[in-house]
Amino acid sequence: MIYNHAKKLVLGSVFASALAIAGGASAADTVGLITKTNANPFFVKMREGAEAKAKELGLTLQTFAGKYNGDNDSQVQAIENLISSGAKGFAITPNDSVAIVPAIKKARDAGLLVIVLDAPTDPIDAPDATFATDNFKAGELIGQWANKTLGDKAKDAKIAFIDLSVNQTAVDYLRDQGFMKGFGIDIKDPKKIGDEDDKRIVGHQIAGGAEDKAQVALETLLQKEPGINVVYTFDEVTAAGAAQALKGVGKDDGSVLMVSIDGGCPGVRNVKAGVISATSQQYPLKMASMAVEAIDKFVKTGEKPKKTEGLQFTDTGVSLVTDKPIDGVPSISSEEGLKVCWGN
Image (cartoon, rainbow, N blue to C red; front, side, top):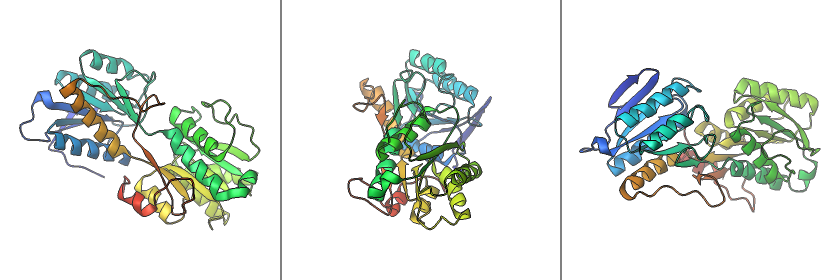
């Protein structure tokens, strides 16, 4: 998806665009949004939310993005640019949760309000606030749904896990462990994947969020245990690959519960088509919109965002999307999910 901006700036290794949102806006009204890349639909939707809220509040929004995932240098340069331009604050989805911290500190020291979106920094208190999906809750919702859908059969389930990375990043283990709690599996180390001893777990495979690797991952687990009847997938791209593996062995008939997380439009359409049984939907547009609003409030009142009670961040919401609702697990339909999804 491509969005046209009034002005495009190339700043060294940064791809940046500056959009004067409202007439009469001055340098003092400037806020920023720095995303990992411009290519991912999740970040496109995030930018859309920031633009709409900035226009509503009469702010000038400057947006920046790295050239690729992991491009920390571009994000550092974007922060330098916002400091130099006199911006009042910015929101950022860090490409490197550790390496970006010194630049964030410099911005805060210069008086800018810094809000991290989606992926927390390390340490999490490096910015003024973090606005993010509760990934543990997202996993817990699909785990609860799968358990209650199976009913008495849940005690004999055969579960395959397709996770993100051998590095076991926070978003990876939070989703995985959340699913386990929701399904009723005892969690050992909450920050470690694969240390559980529940006999219902067939195994864990890594797919790196890639569809082709996810297909191979589930094929491997199906060779180990052909009777798999629940498949947890880190995200909906992973689920699409796993679905191909199920199709290859004739198990794409609804006999296997496939659950996932993200809520992108392709994933929600797969829920509607019955490819994915249920997914947890997150809201990047709302995330960025809340951040711009928080910066505006800080400028006007000096008040900083507050954390959600019991969490180290501000929760921006998550909903279970399924066309097979179950008592005791709140959900929305795929039709409702399609109204607020992101991507093509």
